[in-house]
Image 1 (cartoon, rainbow, N blue to C red):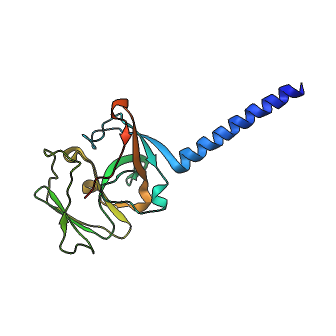
Image 2: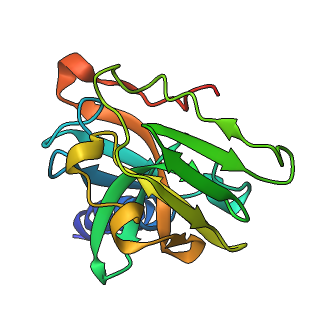
Image 3: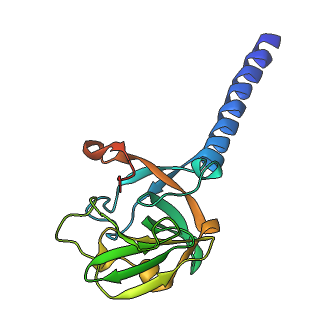
Length: 182
């Protein structure tokens, strides 16, 4: 009888350790995310299953070109996926399909090379945006059909959940997600 309870206790210990481990990983390190919608096409499609890195931004700042998941500022229970275009304390000017960034390093400005977008996708509209020291400007890759910072404004840093790191599904598109070089 003692051996039965001893075996039962061992099984419960293993289950408890597994549950605690999954809880820690899921809530503090990596989070699954299912893409819903077309705002990131052609790079991400509805139904893509991603893993989101929640720990990197605790050690470094988000970078231009990274794909992030965040709480939509209009509804904290809704998650969006977009690409970082503008960083804190920058000014962005959208004109003639191009985005020019002005910051301390480039006071004369530079045009973003969006090599992750196919040539037929362009950024429409002529607008200016100024970011505060805790704000980011994010846009979907499918510029014509993306509800993003152009519509609802700058994204506060506290809204960012994490960095898209891996696409697991569909299997034929499984890959590590890399930040484009500018």
